[in-house]
Image (cartoon, rainbow, N blue to C red; front, side, top):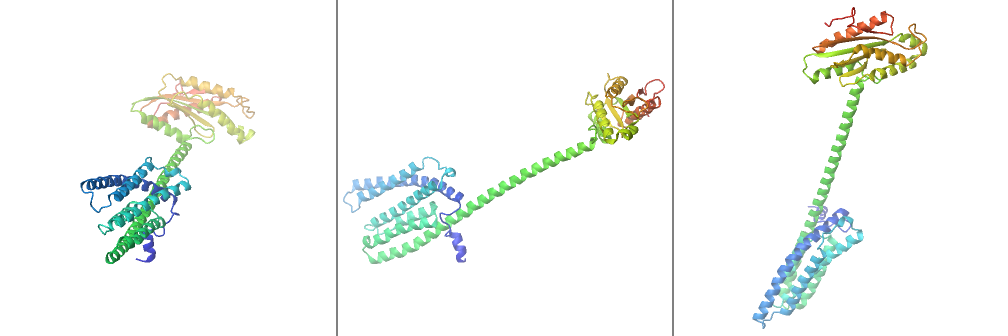
Length: 421
């Protein structure tokens, strides 16, 4: 492993300049861990206090510093209670200012320094009877594993506790051989504990970075999914609009021939009804070519739009449709309207067009725009019968033209009947 990789693994390159989100998360975790650690300390040191008191009551003449140990245990319990008091409410770091973040980091650092230095003092007291530094090592392990600190803050904690122990041992431990052994063991142990603390901190940082990256990736994926859904919805809507436009005559806004065929197919798909009554009205604008030649195509287009509006106003059911049949030809289809008098409706449409009063000086029929109308009303058993009914109405319309225009001819009228094929 290269030095660079080792530094990255141990987190030696981390400091108080860590990512703001990481700092906030570390503070929350430290307070959560500190609370659990404080509860354990209170239980453990309370037991030690009880044991200290019991031993002192049983044999007060032992060379054991009962009062000093009792004071140290009580001090640790008070410190733990202070931590519990400080962390009694959840720490909401998301709204904290940088000033408050530094304060909470300082509190955590002070807690670690207190634990380590407390261990150093107890280990110095142990020299008189036990000659061990176990308490110092245990507290260092706990701080290294449980608490997350940047390497500068952790180094400060190590240095203070270690300085107290190293200097104090020179006075508390009279045996030079034991003292040398302590120094060697402490050195090795502190190095291992330091590396362990940095590895844990480094792993935490990388895990946090991975979780943030995963969250961001999931959010990005979710945003892309939502964006794709929005695009798909827009495409679906656009395709629907295109489909609808393909069924609508661009000029008049009513159905075109494709729209008419689509309507007929839908009617026959709705039910298995064996037979349907079908009514058809077809009309043609009289002498429309002459109108365009006299007034121009833009004016002719306006005539088509106004007449289409008249025809579409005749629709009174979902089983009826108005469509542009050709250049100046229009058609009206109605299904299953038993009360519909197709001849009467056709005459009404003719009069409405005539009442528009659109001037037509080039017409030899009237001085205004008129229409010639043909109707047909028959029973159809299948979609293939439709063309026969329409053809019958078309023939009736041409008869109206032959008979002088501006009139209605019904194929069911005597002499005009056209039987369905």
